[in-house]
Length: 324
Ligand code: GDP
Ligand code: CA
Image 1 (cartoon, protein in one colour):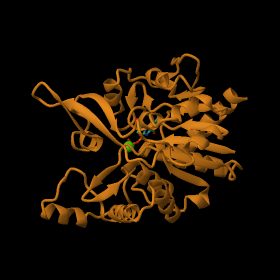
Image 2: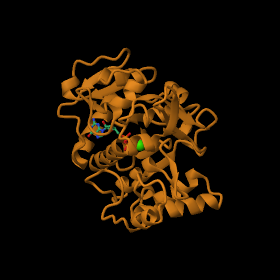
Image 3: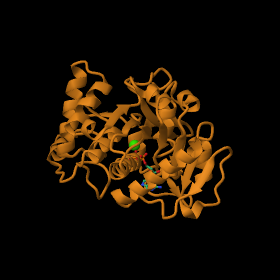
């Protein structure tokens, strides 16, 4: 069985980890999981290329993540950041941990030697043991793209800031007028991405941010068409519970694109290619045109690997029921 998931950072990584756990404990060890990761969050800091969603996937799936926050390295220290601060290096609002810096140094070095982001990601994934666990991690594109957020400039006009500045520095508290993804219209899907969607047996949308994670991947030319055209059932898991994001600021992102912060609103964003939509029991009344909506029988919370595994198992069952 070939399963393809389209993922952002924390929600995507926890879901895929649960999916792998489910497969490995139900006799489906041979299933291959391909993860297509959002790279719109990528940013260059202090000369280093940082790919937050790819890194969260690497660390979570490789067993090196700081569980309490869901991203970054476990047992992290911050000596490098202290030195950067002592030199007055900007920005200071994005803190890089010491172990994490190792990833960014290696990535930046390999990119400078001419490797593509796909090649670099494959090498990083090797270190974290992903291929051995039958997980293939693909960046959505090898073209540099960066999500920007258009906000009020306070003088009656507007300005665009990098997504990370909006998310991390301002905690998404500045009203977003819209998102602009620099480079996306000219980007092409990374090698393997479109085939992973077209040739999958099941496509899953984890509970990732529907606008700035999954929405960005859908904007890569060809991806949305591949999803509409695939013969595989496409099943999504709602990132909202009773209208609220479990973590992060998905509601602020949905507001910016004029979509209701509800399981129905988010499902509607994907209705042109979605077959099944798994929602929290509290959202059991949700309906999305042309989509089979099912409520999970416990809270839709990935509290640990087992819980995430049960959610993933249910998403696969839903895929079987709509697909065959
Ligand atoms: P980010 O890139 O680190 O922001 O992570 P993602 O885009 O992958 O996921 C963020 C989304 O995951 C948010 O909208 C959350 O509401 C959602 N999310 C995180 N944990 C859970 C969970 O346990 N259950 C559900 N249903 N959604 C979750
Ligand atoms: Ca992200």
